[in-house]
Amino acid sequence: MTYTRKNVSRLTRGERRRFVEALLAVKRRGEYDEFVRMHMEYNAPDGERGLRTAHMTPSFLPWHRKLLLELERALRRVDESVTVPYWDWTRDRTATALPWTDDLMGGNGRRSDKQVTTGPFAYRAGHWKITENVTDVQYLTRDLGHSRSPIQLPTGQDLESALADPVYDAAPWDSTVRRGFRNKLEGWGPGRGSVSWRNHNRVHRWIGGVMLGGAAVNDPVFWLHHSFVDLQWTRWQQRHRGHHYLPADPPGEDDAQYDRVVARYERMPPWDVTPDELEDVSGIYRYE
Image (cartoon, rainbow, N blue to C red; front, side, top):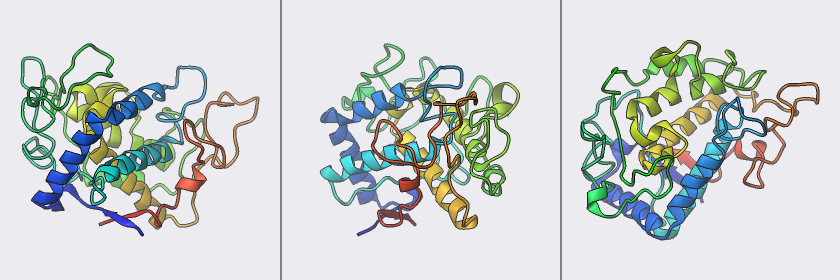
């Protein structure tokens, strides 16, 4: 039986509470930090050798779809009514809008050290100690809006620029490609600084704090963000029927991307699943 992922703005107070309680329970069990470690391990950039699966690569979307499914399964083992909501950052665009409420994600970090001091994931609440990180900081940090050099969240028009492209991805299958839905949604653009941060990437930058690096999963808003990104893949598929994940075949030995990207029918580490098997999830969940 399929279940539903809802817009976070449409959650009831009870649904918000159950979602938060399930996240905290998964954290207490030690399972949550496994997701943080996994994201850090597979967060390889273009410049590193070896296979890329999580970012700067065609498998960005199926990899995070699988990660979301695994987190959702963990949550539903705690409470089978819980699903991962999505945050529509083209509509809820301020630091005081949802999901930045005291009963959900909590608010911005304080000016001095960016530490989040409100909500259920604040360090002072005693339930959310960060143990897997690129620094020694044990508290959740945010800098909503990028205070030193303010930026805005992506707009509906920014998102449309990705959704309108009928090609899923294109060579060289990395952060430099200018064609294709995947990289336009992932958000690696030309130039330096804020002009190069688009869609998915710009949201990470707008939130700041731990969301800036491989340990981004430490901020539970990561899941709401990626649930919305996942919804865009579903919308793209509905708009461009007959268009699929690319590359269909792995790059040849004479290609610079040989053994560096996952083709449509290849296993996608760390799971025994292919991008093709994750293209249709209509039998698992739907979006409302």
